[in-house]
Amino acid sequence: MALPLGAVVARVQAMTARICQFLIAIVFLGLGGWALFAPSSVIELALTEPYRENTFVTRFMMACFGAQAVMFGVMALVVKWGSRAFATFAVVLLPFFVFNWYFHYEVPVLTSIGMLDFAGNLTMFVACVIGWRAAKLDEQDSQGIRSL
Image (cartoon, rainbow, N blue to C red; front, side, top):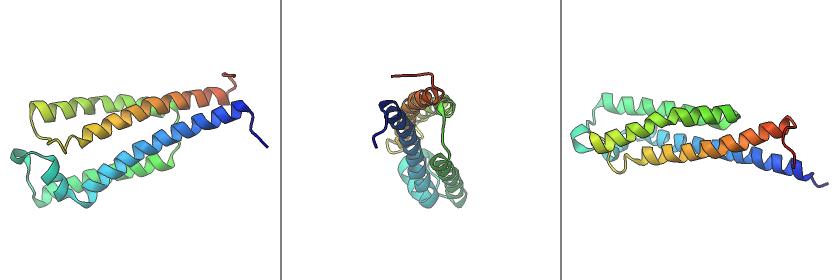
């Protein structure tokens, strides 16, 4: 039995939001996993020479940072986000763009590889905008506000 067109559209919207959420999780799990399981590699590749200290404490702090990112990535996989979650996360990401710019161009702490953080933030921001739109439409459809 075929679904009515409205139900198909609502299902596609819900899947689009979920895919955006998974994309955000992949960024956190990928970069966070790198920091958690290979902190020395992150320090060596992502930080410029004057700011690179490969000590136990630095590796420990990098691994802790990675663990938090992995934890959030797991949560992004298992919790369903609504439009408010996507919008909030997009706003929360904005200061990180300033951070990336400042610590790459003004105070050169991050190498070009360190700017993978910027690429991840940009990917998540775009996913938030697309996910917000899809989740908003899905929420409106589930309340019977939008019709085809």
